[in-house]
Image (cartoon, rainbow, N blue to C red):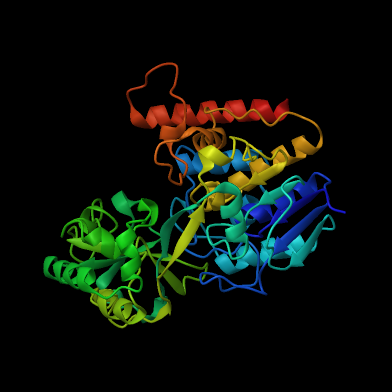
Length: 430
């Protein structure tokens, strides 16, 4: 008989299972794949990366970088794998998604303390130790079970960007560079003024796959489809994902009017992700409209952008800062279902839930993570943010302010990060 049952082998569930197993607990991991696959999943491997392959900035003095450092200190299993299969992405941590999921799957299947059961769970006994990690694409009938237990769940729409073949782009209309000569692992597709405004005009009038559902106005800002963003104004994209600021095209010696950035999707660089191009356009429209970008006029789409409905709980009324259900001690919710947003945030929630499950089973108090750490601040946000709750990713606004005011922003971020790491290292050594 297992000590803990974990529902879902995504990022959070895989991290939780491996963490608890390493602490000596017997884990039963339930995963619906390959019996049932959601619309966004394509692989039977665990911890599948379904949208961008970027885990965001790895700069230790950025919010995302701080979160990664905290996870490394606490011994995250998945982040160690991510580091091992990273691909060039400038200052970001991007991974070879197939290699990442494959390695996670092998680690789980070779762990003697984990038993995997490939079945679709319909309900669970909340009086028993569980970690629910079914994710933003929770399948029926379990989604209905959650609604019955926790009340009406909230939804937003999440979009994935297209992936194109690197050998199909026109390299005469691109240059390799990052902003201000940094992060040169990006390929930049240039647009003139006329090309840009033609592209925007066609983008906002193109046919979408889920046009009726947008009337509900439930689109999450963090994954805003590029066509919806473009509707906010003709120049919105030039000050967003297509901004040319800090870039000089070596062919002309000038800053382009606009640029579309492509990021390596795999280490070989044969697959390229269109950065910031999450979309809900029909597949044919994606090929037509994105083909108006000169460098992509003959682009081969290896995967078109897709959009799907995501599910998350009303965290402040449901879980505490330790990711444990307020009304059901010993039962936790982690991953994007809990209200965290992002790959690394999901991994972090799975790790914290697992560490606190271990302490619960051992009769100990939960880990005392405070708002001085990014992991603690995320948990406290979920527990206390009652007004218009929406999913949240790592950012400095979540952290408690410093005891002294530091005017310089870079110095202030550095001090916030160093404070967090001092506290976390002290907590781990206790």
